[in-house]
Amino acid sequence: MDIFTLAIWVGTLVFLGVSFAKDKVKTKQALKMAFGMGKGMLASILSIIFAIGLILTILPPAEIAAFVSNQSVLLATVVAALFGTITLVPAFIAFPLVGTLVGAGVSVVPAVAFLTTLTMVGVVTFPLEKKEFGVKFTAVRNSLSFLFAIVIALVMGVII
Image (cartoon, rainbow, N blue to C red; front, side):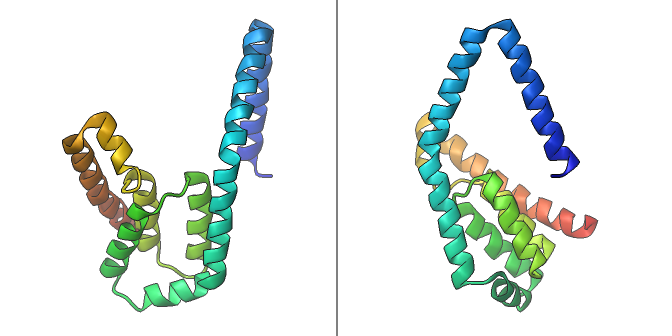
């Protein structure tokens, strides 16, 4: 376990202890709610992990890297960004997935474009966002997020 993970665990336990000291009833109630939400999300999380494992079995990261490396960086970046916009994967799964792809040889620029659009642009969540914020706001936010994702990817390619 790295130092960052250890610090998160220690901080969580310290704050949980402070919360228990302040109000045991509310803390127990909050923990029950959190565990209930976690149980509700468990099936979705496991299905996403299974789907990613299946995809990486069918299309190994080395093959994805070979395909991406045959494309121009700009084309690979745009395609990765488009793929990221239509994929709905939680960030805690996306980061290791992108790390696997980069480790297999995918260029950093398309990988960052994929990761950034994955977390910033939501085609799958568009209907819900449209309902809550309106069509214009949702379209502008997603369009700007897509453009900024490409810019972020290109900047990261220069930095790294």
